[in-house]
Every structure is written in C-alpha cells, then in structure tokens.
Image 1 (tube, rainbow, N blue to C red):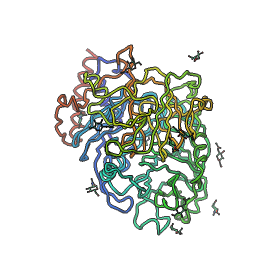
Image 2: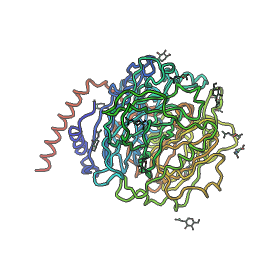
Image 3: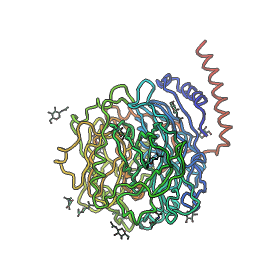
Image 4: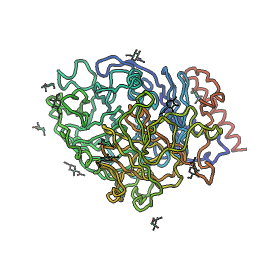
Length: 594
Ligand SMILES: *[C@@H]1O[C@H](CO)[C@@H](O)[C@H](O)[C@H]1NC(C)=O
Ligand SMILES: *[C@@H]1O[C@H](CO)[C@@H](O)[C@H](O)[C@H]1NC(C)=O
Ligand SMILES: *[C@@H]1O[C@H](CO)[C@@H](O)[C@H](O)[C@H]1NC(C)=O
Ligand SMILES: *[C@@H]1O[C@H](CO)[C@@H](O)[C@H](O)[C@H]1NC(C)=O
Ligand SMILES: *[C@@H]1O[C@H](CO)[C@@H](O)[C@H](O)[C@H]1NC(C)=O
Ligand SMILES: *[C@@H]1O[C@H](CO)[C@@H](O)[C@H](O)[C@H]1NC(C)=O
Ligand SMILES: *[C@@H]1O[C@H](CO)[C@@H](O)[C@H](O)[C@H]1NC(C)=O
Ligand SMILES: *[C@@H]1O[C@H](CO)[C@@H](O)[C@H](O)[C@H]1NC(C)=O
Ligand SMILES: *[C@@H]1O[C@H](CO)[C@@H](O)[C@H](O)[C@H]1NC(C)=O
Ligand SMILES: *[C@@H]1O[C@H](CO)[C@@H](O)[C@H](O)[C@H]1NC(C)=O
Ligand SMILES: *[C@@H]1O[C@H](CO)[C@@H](O)[C@H](O)[C@H]1NC(C)=O
Ligand SMILES: *[C@@H]1O[C@H](CO)[C@@H](O)[C@H](O)[C@H]1NC(C)=O
C-alpha cells in the first residue's frame, strides 16, 4: 500500500525533527513514502501457471511518482523465500550508494525481513524503473515504474500530454527464475524465450495457430485526438525488441532522464534495460483497434514468431476489434546498420531544461579533456574452473561477502581488490572481486567492446553518461575523431552491437561505489559486471553520505547485525508512526514556541 502524500509529509516532518542537528533539517524538498511488499503470486501470462513476483499484489508493480529533488522513502518487505535487494535503475543516489540496492553496496534483505530505502531524487527528471537485482529475480517480475517529474517552475519541452502511460516490455520464460538459474549454473544456454510480455500480460490472439486461447492481453484505452506520453521500459532478459504501434507515429521525447530532439519513428529498437518516452497522438479514424507490438530483433523471425508481444490500442470511439497481420518491423536480419543508425539518430535537446533551469546542453562535454580511458571487452561465455562464466576484460566478477564501502568503513581488509584492468589483457580469465579504482572529478571515457555474439546493453549506476560513439568493428584511438561532441544523448543504459563498440564519456562527480553491469540478465548473472570506486581523496570520503542507521550487516560484519523481529501488520506500524509523529510534533511546537 502506498501511503498518501499527506501522511508521508507527516513522516517527512518526523524525519526532519529527528535530524534537527543536521543541515538536512529544513530542506524544503517534499518527501513521499511507500510501502512495498514483494511476494509471489500465481498467474499464467503465457497460458502456463507460474509464480511471478508482485509488488503489493501488482505485476508490474505500482508507480513511484516523484519530482526533482523529492525525498523518497520505500519500506521494502521481502515476502519471498530468498534474499532480496531492490535497485532503482537510473536514479543516481548522489553521494549515497548505500541506497543503490546491489550486492556490492548493500547486504541483502533476508526473507521475512523488511528494509527501508531513503534517498533523494537529486537533480533528476525522467522515466526510470525499479527491479529486484539478485538471483535472476527480474526474470520473474518485481519491477515497476519510477517517474521523476519536472518541477513546476521548469517547463517540459512539449505540450503537456493528455495522459501518461507506462509500458513494460520484455522477453519471458514460462520457467521460473529458480529453474533459469539452475540451467545457467549447469552451463546451459537459456534458449529461445517463450514469449514477450507487455505490462505483465501475454499476446492478443492475433493468430490462432501461434497464440493459444484464453490469454489475458493488455489493452491501452485512449481518447481520439489526444496525445499521450508513453514511457516504455525494456525489463526483459536478453532479447532486443522492436516496438511499434500500428498506423501511429512515435515521437521520441526522452531517453532515461534527458529530453531528446523530437523525431518521428514508425518503430523503435529498445534493448534490455532501456527506457524511452514517446509522444503518441491518437490521430487515426478508429475504424478498428490497433496493434501494439514488441517483437524480437536480430533473430530469424520465422523461428522466433512466438517471441512477440502484442497489446491493443483501443480508442473510445473504436468501431471494432483489431484483426489481420501485425504491422511489419524492420526486415534486416543480415543488415544491422539500420538499427545502429537509428541509435545514433537519438540526440539530446540541448536547449531544453530538465532538472535545473539551465539548458541540458550547457554542459559542454565535448570540450573537456579525457583523464582516463577504460576499454571493457566482453567475450562469449567461457569455462572457468569447470563452470560457465561471463567476463569483462578477463574478470568474471564475484560479489564480495561484505559490501565494499561497509568493509571500508569498518576496516575489513581483503574483501575486494582495486585492480580491475583498464584494458583487455592477454591472460586467462579468472573469477575475482576486482573493482575499478576511479578518480574523483575525473572525466573518463569508457569503451564497451562487444566481442560476444549477442547484442549487449551496459548500465552504470550513479551516473548518466554521454553516448558519443557507436559502431561495428574494433574501437581504436582514431575512432575518437568521429565522436559526437555536440549533442550526444546522456543516459544510463546503452546498447553495444555484437562485433562492435560503444564509447561513453562520464564526469565522475558522484562519490561512492557504483555498479557497471551487463543488463542482459544471463551475462550479468554469469559475472559480467564490476564496480567503480570513487572517493574524494582530500576529504577522505567525507563528501559521501554516512551509512544509514538501518544499514544491514553481513559477511565479515555479520556479528553487528541484530535479528529483526517480524513486524506485525502495516496498519499497526502506521499507527505507531502517527502516534510518534504527534508526540514529536507536540514536542517540536513546544520547543519552537518556548
Ligand atoms: C504524479 O505527480 C505529478 C506531480 O505532482 C502529478 O501532476 C501527477 O498527476 C501524478 N501522476 C500520477 C500518475 O500519480
Ligand atoms: C520495517 O518496517 C517497520 C514498519 O513496519 C519500520 O518501523 C522499520 O524501520 C523497518 N525496518 C527497517 C530495517 O527499515
Ligand atoms: C520453479 O520451477 C521448478 C521446476 O519447474 C519447481 O520445482 C519449483 O517449485 C518452482 N519454484 C517456484 C518458486 O515456483
Ligand atoms: C498464423 O501463423 C502461422 C504460422 O506462422 C501461419 O502459417 C499462418 O498463415 C498465420 N495465420 C494468419 C491468419 O496469419
Ligand atoms: C511527425 O509526423 C507528423 C505526421 O506525420 C508530422 O505532422 C510532424 O511534423 C512530424 N514531426 C516531426 C518532429 O518530424
Ligand atoms: C480509416 O483509415 C484507414 C487507414 O488509414 C483507411 O483504410 C480506412 O478507409 C479509413 N476508414 C474510414 C471509415 O474512414
Ligand atoms: C529462418 O528459419 C527458417 C526455418 O528454419 C529457414 O527456412 C530460413 O532460411 C531462415 N531464415 C534465415 C534468414 O536464416
Ligand atoms: C586539454 O588538453 C590540451 C592539450 O593537452 C590543453 O592545451 C588544454 O588546455 C586542455 N584543456 C582543458 C580544458 O584542460
Ligand atoms: C580455480 O579454483 C582454485 C581453487 O578454488 C583456485 O585456487 C584457482 O585460482 C581457480 N582458478 C581460476 C582461474 O579462477
Ligand atoms: C587508487 O587511485 C588513487 C589515485 O587516484 C591512488 O592514490 C591509490 O593508491 C589507488 N589505490 C590503489 C589500491 O591502487
Ligand atoms: C578486432 O581485433 C581482433 C583482435 O583483438 C582481431 O582478431 C579482429 O580481426 C579485429 N576485427 C576487425 C574487424 O578488425
Ligand atoms: C571476436 O574476436 C575474434 C578474435 O579476437 C574475432 O575473430 C571475432 O570475429 C570477434 N567476434 C566478434 C563478434 O566480435
């Protein structure tokens, strides 16, 4: 249950009173609070019963609706049978990697426990999502939308849409995440997914041979003549998808927190972990409903026909159901340049303002000197010590038992090494807890070189990066001559074509320990990730937030962890909060007016 905004303001005041001595105290930024219960529900999105992870019984989960600089409190209840961590993909957690929700920064929340995330959506706008980061759980759901609205004083660079629609697309297996994990542990490939879900639902029965009877599909209801903002997120496992709506233009407006130049597309390739906003005008005659399609990319489509998500766009004045063939996507199995060119066509709208009043384009990234270069090369999965693993620069990452900054603060030695190679080395791959020693205030170039046979997407926590170059072949220093130094999009998840590279520039102004990972769930699970450690040497890490009071302890620090009493019902705790608030409010007023 999401608490209402007014009651959460109470909590906000409560928190501020509790922190009376800190500067945070009278920050005017509002607080919104949520209570999220992650539990299994049984549904049959593809006609086969399976357990999926719901949030407050919803799949996908409820929306977090914030505005720039809001404080967000999410009390997460783990009602699964295994550890849980929630990560807030794209939310930068400035100076606060304690809230990032990945194993390098947080101890997992054990089953039956709850843990409260408390962070600020500092200087951000845009469309993001949250998801469970452990144990392949995203393949079972647990994801939901996270919106950071513009502050009212900063206009959005398009007319206020008539509505806001969240669309989650992703490839899906009817096997549960435990079974998928077992397959990977046994060294197997997951094989072709069983379908594509749109908002947690299977395909509309557009073809009676391909789609069985009785599948619940998604219907998006709209009014003729209106324009909607569609926030589309790829929360799937490993398959790139082409997104399109029959007879409708997609006007691209935002990519993961930055406004884009508005361009028309009839269909758009979206890769695992990516988010986009499209403005779509309902300008058709509604002679019938329309198909919304998300189909598999870069595969033999006649073999992969079932890996197609189909939903229905329904005008209120529609004259009947949709029928006939799906609108065609790009037909270019042998020619991937179309997709590459489409990716390069995404440009930042330099004159639009986002989180701050000054235009997005006022940071002239193209004229800043690069301080360090990291070439991170991925190769197809390989066998290390008898098990199948995936590696970056020959390192297949193993998560530390003790989170990295927690180990630092408590002087636990030997938890990890700061020796992640800045380029591929000619040595045999190994499993290791090896982290990048990155320089605070550096301006770095990261080149993702994909020698794997599949499309990859890479994500960096804590940051947004400029995607300055993308091409096939090997990256070389000469490739810099072709970088986009003017209007490259700044985002947090980029695709890297197989046999190709993507170069990004990052200004390292956010202290903490930040995950760099393959978004493809199987590659990530097999070890294709690392972390960047960024501390301010002059301040000995003081610019970073202190560990939160409720920090969980594990690994070498497990003895510091108190057992958690399983709390009763949410309602009673809310009453407790209200009572505590009243007590404090009275104390506060007494203090103020004395
Ligand atoms: C989200 O918050 C904004 C700004 O406070 C508000 O205008 C909008 O109606 C909210 N949207 C939803 C879906 O709650
Ligand atoms: C667990 O939830 C209760 C409210 O139900 C809250 O008081 C407590 O702080 C939460 N525990 C943690 C570790 O966040
Ligand atoms: C997952 O699937 C396996 C094998 O099909 C089954 O034994 C197990 O009970 C399932 N687990 C859950 C949580 O659904
Ligand atoms: C349905 O799909 C099958 C298999 O691809 C195809 O042979 C058939 O022509 C399709 N039916 C229609 C009505 O499009
Ligand atoms: C997009 O297409 C529509 C209709 O086809 C046209 O009116 C509009 O000007 C186009 N917008 C852009 C940004 O090209
Ligand atoms: C509606 O539009 C479709 C496609 O643009 C067209 O084929 C059809 O004739 C139109 N129907 C009516 C009733 O105008
Ligand atoms: C796709 O698979 C079909 C069926 O196996 C095969 O006939 C066809 O040649 C394949 N197409 C391509 C482009 O590989
Ligand atoms: C960047 O480097 C060049 C040459 O190495 C130097 O001349 C220039 O001043 C540097 N620019 C900045 C902004 O530091
Ligand atoms: C293989 O495992 C052994 C024993 O655990 C370990 O000493 C060795 O370093 C491992 N080799 C690699 C390449 O990870
Ligand atoms: C990490 O880099 C800093 C300089 O940025 C250096 O002082 C420090 O010794 C490095 N640490 C290790 C373990 O290499
Ligand atoms: C890329 O580099 C590898 C060696 O790392 C080489 O084997 C391969 O041929 C190169 N590919 C191209 C397209 O130049
Ligand atoms: C990967 O690298 C090998 C040699 O290093 C090269 O022969 C092969 O073409 C590359 N494959 C891709 C997909 O980049």
